[in-house]
Amino acid sequence: MTRLACRLLRVIVPALVLSGCLFLTAFAQTSKPQAPDLLERAKALHRRVPLIDGHNDLPWQYRQKVNRDVSKIDISQPQPELMTDIPRLRAGGLGGQFWSVYVPVSMQGQEAVRATMEEIDVVYQLIRRYPDTFQLALTADDVDRAFKAGRIASLIGMEGGHSIDNSLAALRMFYTLGARYMTLTHGSNVPWADSATDTAKVGGLTTFGEAVVREMNWLGMLVDLSHVSPETMHDALNVTQAPVIFSHSSARALCDHPRDVPDDVLRRLPANGGVVMVTFVPSFVSKVVRTHDLKRQAERDRLRGLPGSTEQSVNEGLGRWDKANPTPHATLNDVADHIDHIRKVAGIDHIGLGSDFDGITSVPDGLEDVSKYPMLTVELIRRGYTDQDIMKVLGLNVLRVMRRVEDVSARLQNEREPSAARIEELDGKQGK
Image (cartoon, rainbow, N blue to C red; front, side, top):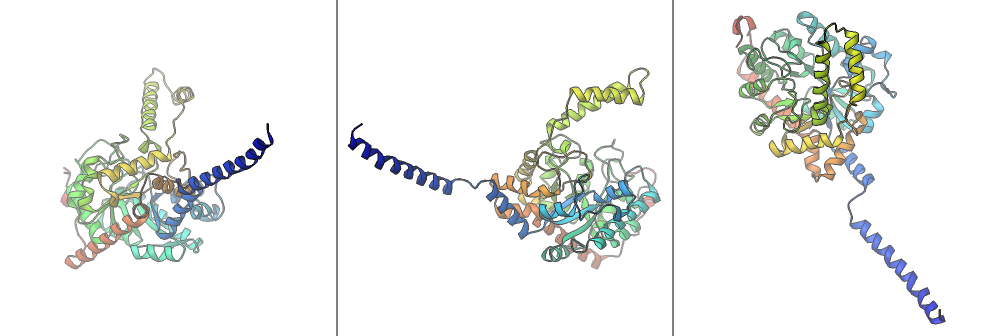
C-alpha cells in the first residue's frame, strides 16, 4: 500500500466512524422511547390522578389466614404469600382501592349479615393500623383529598346481595357503615336477582330486586353488575337512575365466560354513563385459559361418573390430567386487549380497572401483584392511548361515576323518604 493510500485511510476511516455515531445518535433521538422512558411516563401519570382499583379481597385473606386479627399479618412489610402489601401498593402507584367485604354464598341470612359486618371491621382496622397509608373514603371528594395527602383512599365494596338478607334496612345500615357499592349477586342467585353462574330462576330482577336498585340510587351506593346474569344487567340498566359499575369484569366477546360483559350491554353504557372495571382474572381474560378450565371440569365430571369413584380417585385422576395438560397462562396483553375492545364498543369514558388481587389463585404474566399496575399503563402507552385516555382508565372515569351517583342521591333524597318495601309484599312466593 502506498503512503498516499495510508494517509487517505487515516483520514477517511475516522470520518466514517464519526458519521456512523452521529447517525445512530440521531436515530436514537427520533425512535420510540425505550422501556425505562415508558415506565417513567406511566409512573408520572399515576402521580397525576388516583389509580382506583375496583376489587381487592385482602380483608377475606385476613379472615381465612388469621381469623381477622390484623396484627398477625403486618402488610407494612413484604408479604410473599399475598398479592397485596404496602411496599408493593406504593410501587404500583395505587391511589384508591375498593376493599371487597366478600362473604361466600354458603353464608345466608343473619350469618351473612354478621360476617359482612366483620369484614367491614377488618377494613376499619387496617385504616386505623396504617393511618399514614390508608384513609377512609366515602365520596369522590374524599378520594381526591386522600390522594393529595399521599394516602390510598380506602373504599368499601360489598360482594353479593345475600349480604343484606332481603332487607332494605340492612342495605341502608351497610351504607351507613361505609359500603359504597354492592354487587347484586355473587356466584349463586339471590331470591330477587339471577347470577351469571347459576341457573336462572327469576329472569333478571324481581319487583323487589328493582326496589333494591332504586334504594341504592337513593342512598348513593354504586350498583355493581359484576357476577349477575345478562338479564339482570339489562333489568338493572332499565331501572337505575344513576350510572352502574362492573367492579371486576371483562369483555365476553373476547373470552366467553359468563362473568364477562356482553357487547349488547357494553353498547348501553354510554347512555347510562357506567364503567366496566377490567379484571385480571385469568379465566375471564384469556380464551385459552377458559378453554383449558372447561376441559378440566369435563374431566372432573367424567372421573366422578366412573363406577366406584371416590374423592381420592377423582383427585388422583385430575392430578394425572393436570400433568399431561399444563395450565396455560393469561398475560398482561390479554388484559389490554379487553380494554381495547371495551373502548371500541362503549368508548374510553366507560373503562376502569378491577384486579381481584388476593381473590384469585393465579394471575396473568406481567400482572402478578399490586406493584405491577404501571406495566399495564406502559402497555396502553405502547398502544397509542393518550395521557388523557389513560388517566380516564386509571381513575377519572370512576370518579365521574361516583360524583354522578352522589348527585342522583341528593336529588332523590329531596323527593322521597327511605323505601319501606319488603320482599314478602312485592314478590310473595312467586317471584318475578
